[in-house]
Picture 1 (cartoon, rainbow, N blue to C red):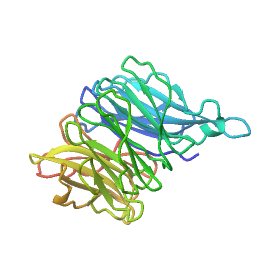
Picture 2 (spheres, rainbow, N blue to C red):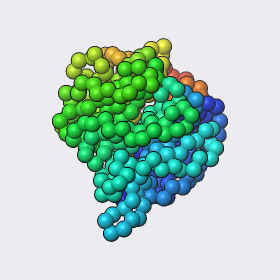
Picture 3 (tube, rainbow, N blue to C red):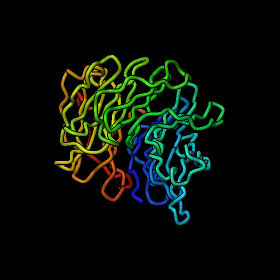
Picture 4 (tube, rainbow, N blue to C red):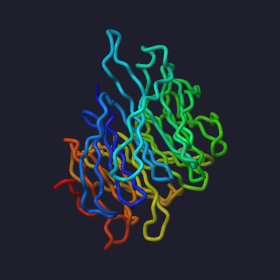
Amino acid sequence: MQRAMALRLLRGKDGRLTAYAPVAGGVARWTEERPGGPRWTGPRLLEVAGLTALTVTQGADGYVHLVGLRHRQGGGDGPDVDVVHATQFQTGRPLTAWHSLGTPHPKDRRKAQRTGAPAAAVDSSGAVHVFVRNAGRGVSARRQDAKGKWGGWTDLKGTDVLDGLSATAAADGRIELLAPAARGALRWHQPEPGAAYQRADDIPARPEAGSAAGVATGAGTVTHYWRDAVGLEVLAWRPGAGEPAPLGGETGTGPVAVVRTTVDGHDCTVLAHRDAKSGRLAVAAHPTEHETAGVWWTPSGEPGTSRPALALDGLGLVVLAALAPDDGLLVARQKTDEPGLALRAWGRVGE
């Protein structure tokens, strides 16, 4: 089965970046040798057989949580499917064992096979929240508390949900979930940290499946980004902002990567995606929560790169990573001797 080739780039408590991508046999992991690079170790294979999708999230404690969808050989009626979870407590260290979280359909194997790729986020208490599209095309959630105990699956309802859920923790620890659906974008939120999820008003938009991402842009605010399923341009939206704001990028494809940083003293949000027309990546930035200031997409890298990921390194510099056509890791880092968001030349990890 084809793997959902997500790439995630996260910074540990020691300031070193780690990149994660699903590959044949498990997860490939690359780790900076020191904060700010430029040398990396890896890839190291974190083995887990049958992994078909992966999301990676991190809490304020620095713990990294890997949540995947696993398909294993079953009987004549298809594979055994479950959601699996493992934790990395320190940069570069081994994972815990992979633990099965089951699916929302423990007694129905055929329904379990229709479980969608997971999304995950960590709240302010360190509790992990996992979300999947269920067999009824709604959303189900499961939560691990700060002591490591998992609750059962909860049906959050929803209709005609597509793959590509996006879960984001706000700065105050509340979690928001955006779910692309056939006739709009569905949203759930916590009214306060640790509270049960409530269904929020739908967003009058049609996100392309697998393109959504979110970033905390205020104390209790999450700004969501996605690619329009019809016009393909990137849109931005947050509660109270009215209609989604258009950001261009109509020739893009795949997921949108996002990170918030300071550029020349200004609070900015940086975006990246793959441009289908040129086959290269494209990067843009705008003042945080002021999308109307204008966005210009700048091409970067060689044709054939895909699945961009953004993070700030241990020196506070923007790092853009992507996968080469052979699943190798490519990295470009923000220059320190030029103003703005200029990136250094791309380099391949291990060369």
